[in-house]
Image (cartoon, rainbow, N blue to C red; front, side, top):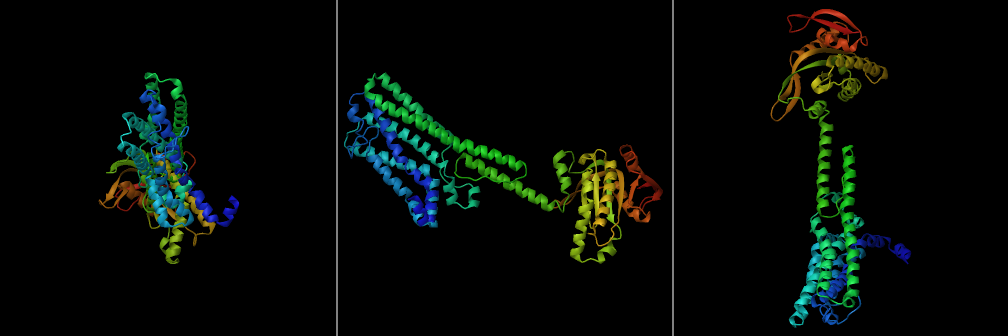
Length: 514
């Protein structure tokens, strides 16, 4: 029969399947009737001491129908609850027949306020059931006390049963909300976790214990309450375990999933978690999603602006927290690298071809810089400036700069051999080591962390001398003296003699890398 229905109207069948958990919520009144009957009957026996309990325990619930059954009484409150629940759930029945967005909106609102609505219906049903016999004067204080006990047990049941169904409603929530909406917190009435746990303990552990104590205190004969006590204890045990299981599924399971996703985020996978309800776990998930969005946005900003700014410096500043952003003196090796005869080369290329060439060129020659603990400070047209300093991770800064230059020479040879350049590309590299100043330069609206000082100027002058001295890598005597012990025989140098530099009155001892 099911296959025939599916074949006849598969869309309707699919909608009905997605709404199954919503329809299951509508079965709660049946459980309420069992709990109301069991707790009311045993409470009446306890409060009356067993005197007249066989006649009075059905008075309240059966005032209109007079129908009494073993284990459950079908009365005014139960009928009222059935009617109210049907009205409350009617939009879901209509939605299965005709998927209307207005109906979907109603289901969303009612599902979001299911706790509030359930308590209101319980209060109305219990109030009317009390009011009718109350006006006739047929109720004693024992009736009201027993009704209060039954109401507390039913309230605990409502929380337990709603939680039991909500913890399974993933398909329903996915049917009611668009995928992007599942990552946002939704409005609705929710019950704090401590209230849920407390209601379970009070309703199905504390209250039964108190009633048993009163029964024995009043010396009620065992045969008077044995059957009702057995029903109450059976329901209490089942509902207590079921409620705790629901809380586990609604709290522990989502938390385990959240912890797993935190590990994925820590590994760079910016995955978000779906939000199904509006409880404490939902707020925790919403905070997690906001954090993921922030991390993702920062990563995108880093990837984007790191191509224009010195993101390597930013990373090191954040990582070691040693650099004073306001400026400080430091020792470092500075490298300048510039393409030889770039102007004639660029004149042969269009604007797009020129940009492609530079990007390809930097793709080859910059990895040796970072591989040897260097930090790219800035790109200047076809030139690049790199810094090697202990404050940014390079302890053996002079030797690291020389090793990087040798690696860049090999990378340039690979570029020329690949045929990706418009012609044979040559560059010049100048390296000097000494003291300089690092700090933020600019305005309050736009700052750049950069390096200034005589060491920087000299390194730039050395790069300019490479063409004049017919070599590609020039190292100052000061830098070579610092690097020689670490380099050993791995790199060969040849003296260039003492050379005068622009802007300097004294000559400087220079060496080339052979």
